[in-house]
Amino acid sequence: MKRRLSAIFAADMVGYSRLMEVDEIGTLQRQKAHRAELINPTLEEFHGRIVKEMGDGILVEFISVVEAVQCAVVIQQGMVNRETDVTDDLRISYRIGINLGDIIIEDDDIFGDGVNIAARLEQRAEPGGICISGTAYDHLKSKIEVGYESLGDVQVKNIKRVVRAYKILTDPDQVGETVGEKQAWLVISRQFATIAAILLIVIIGSGVWWWSLQPDIEPADPKKFAHKLPDKPSVAILPFDNLTSDLNNQYLADGFVETLITEMSQLADLFVIARNSSFSFRGKNVTVSQISESLGVRYVVEGSFQRLGRQLRINVQLVDAVTGFHIWSKRYDRPEADFYKLQDELIGDLVIMIGGRAGGGIFDAERRRLATLEPADISAIELWEKTAQIHFKYTKESNKETGVLSRELIKKAPEYSRGYVALAWHHLFKILLGISDKPADDLLSCTELAEKAIRLDGQDYMGYLAHAFCKGTDGKGKEASVSMQRAYDLNPGDVAVQQGYAMRVLVPKGKYAEAIKVLERIRRLNPVQESFVDGILGSIYLAVGDYPNSIKFLEHEKNQLPGFRSLLAVALHFAKQKAQAKLVIKEILKDNPNYSAEAFLTGTGLLSKAENNRFAKALVAAGLPEK
Image (cartoon, rainbow, N blue to C red; front, side):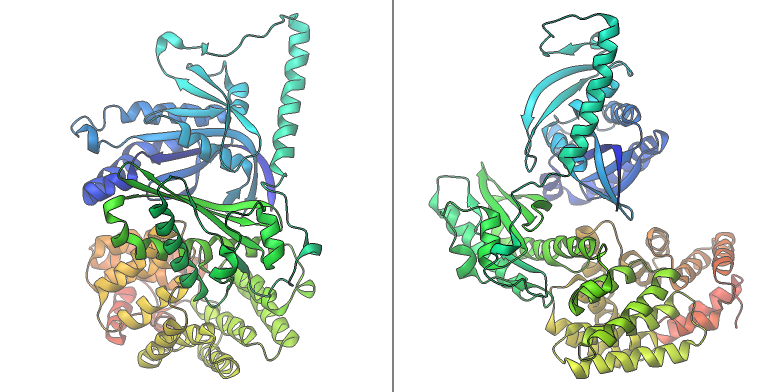
């Protein structure tokens, strides 16, 4: 993990949930147009790096805070004339928050107070407005042609200290002005002012860095834990606070949390405290760290329920009590009348966002923690998680490393099933990455290792999941479907299982629409895809002959495996874009000189044999060697 000082730009659509309820298709189409025609080109012009994309917003990193604010002004001014033909109740507008602060960088993601403050300032911005932090203001006050309105020192959620905040004013008559700010009581000479300014910058920079290292709450004391932390990630879900005086709302909140605990308890890789224990702290004057120590858990989920007119607002946050940091939070707004209808969906979303293996807050935190530890210093279960994190990079180098770690895990715990699962994935991805010298041997090893994992622990869904993918890649669809169904029965709430279920159970049955629905939901919950969802969606659209959607998703797939690139070439070929198809083939052969149509058929098992053979012929026509 690295640190650097950056300008963080957070933007979201005002009233996204309400607009989606009223006109989902129209809202998505207009949002897509705004992104393609205004927002994304402007971000690129001002050198912004998009870190995360959500349905209702984006998180962007800028090296220059000047460019970040200039970009925000251009976007907000550009939006003024883009919704003139839309009624006020349906008009799309954005709020933008910008902070200059210290951030933590890991892979392509960013964390820390620098990010959190930007997100909180965005929530304070007016529709169509921009709110910046004091550190940003100090840096750019006279560098761009805007004015400022001081909002004073504001307290933002999950940040201990107050934050100076300013509203950007774009009225030409207010350029260079700062409205509402208290004037200094003493005027000093230019020389001393320069010295003071330099000292102020140093103090602010040091302060931002120091505060970014401070926990959000008092950390739990490992010496005071009443129980040893389980090998699995452990979590307690506390009763949500009722922020209204209506007692009926508390009953609603309690029922919601009870269901959440039940669903989270079904995730095989988590240790979840029972409802009676977590609810026993209601009304007691205890801190989160004390609850963590008493129950012997690392993670704590807190939340609140609130009625706002005819809207119901649910706030949820996840805390690592051992470090004292908030590691995930989200606000959900739902129409009161539709709450019961949407409750199952909302619970399902929270289960994935908090505890899901792919993209869930707990496992994201676990992998960041374990990445800093040496294999010899951690338990077998933790070594499995460390190996899984490296596997998710899906590169030749990471595959080599997972081979070493998985064999070390088997040596360390020969009766633990996950070591054999890890080694099975290693062999499978040698094929999928196009680096296997003997694909048939790797497929055989993959299957045998998965079967050994199942023999060691017949209740571990991961063994069946690996077995399903090994068999599917080997073209043995019926066996893959049986194993995938078993994995789904054991752990239906896991994102990877849901994805595999769509691939290995629904698609072979021709239930393409149902599979697309499952995958689109996963995509919505985890917009920064790491797990082939876009590639699989593109594959399904290819199978049904929807070439524009197939091309769109396959081009967006982050993990550019040879198989997905080949399917993109096929989609382009069938869409009569044969020149582009040939270019894709050239790119594949540049990275994988020995790749061929035969290798494509060996390493793909998602669709039917007849479809794959048809695709292989298209690949040969586009320039891929037969063998």
